Length: 270
Image (cartoon, rainbow, N blue to C red; front, side, top):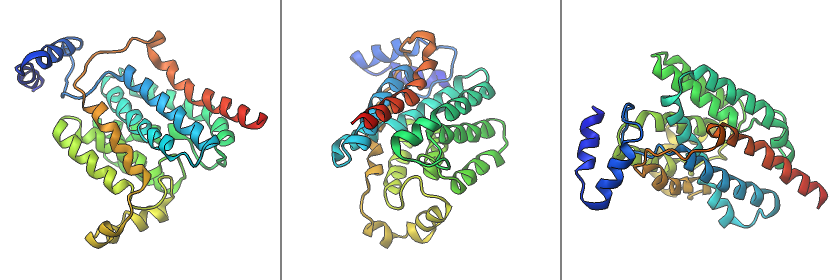
């Protein structure tokens, strides 16, 4: 199935064709659906935009243009997780890494961003998304259902919609056009209701049947989280190259707790 896709893409004219042939040659033995698999580059962009977002949240809360830049980070983390789930040799070990990062990151997350111990950080959201993907891969469809239910009953960064975003991306990853349409619709719905880490009763209120009616949809303001759509062009770039980072780039996620500790230290000294 993959070979005809690459063949059709390689038939495009000029520099586009050469670029696609070159990028496809990096992983010829792996399925490729024409989206951006250069996760090293995407993780770097996600980390930079995340630091900008958190710095604004701590020191410049009214500088909304900085918060808008930060909307890029979470969709890129989700997409890197989706690609990683397809490529990893041991998804259980991948899940354990996310769990360890969640534990390490919780104290800095609470200190820097004024969260409480029951407000979980982004790695818990990513871990639930990975558990959902593992269930889909193995035909255990109760696992994605349980992951979504857990995200409804516990407060975490991006909450129910964050886990749903990961599962939507995984489901649509084989068709770039469908992925673009589906993610656009998801972002439009994402910004219509409650805060993105709201617990289950807000999810039921804003993502229930009534909230999706035409009248409510037309009357809802566009919230900032809908601007996650600006990450879409980066995901749609057809690139199979790997930005080679020391240690395979696994250490890059340690930037998350490290930058939160730095922000907390600066805030405490100010």
